[in-house]
Image (cartoon, rainbow, N blue to C red; front, side, top):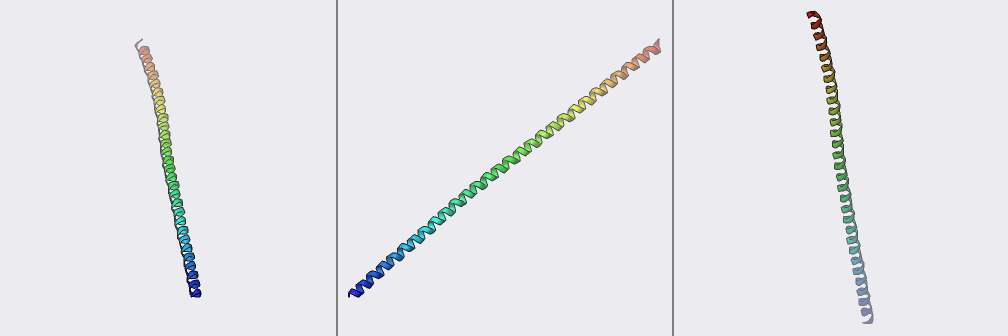
Length: 107
């Protein structure tokens, strides 16, 4: 009977040890999954931040392109004004020449 009691006690201790090992393995798996989920969430945050930075960069590039286009339009408008002034000056000079020629012809 003592042998059977000792065997039963040993079997119980073995079962308890196995249960503790199994519980530790389950806890380790839960911990690993928790770390994995945390890493995944962090990676998603990083990716979202990279997307926000890319969008901001695109916005800045578009704004710069608009500024360049505006500057080009201003340069073109300035050149048109300059050419108009030159043409007006030439027209005025021609008008004066014609008036002078007409006055000479009338004399």
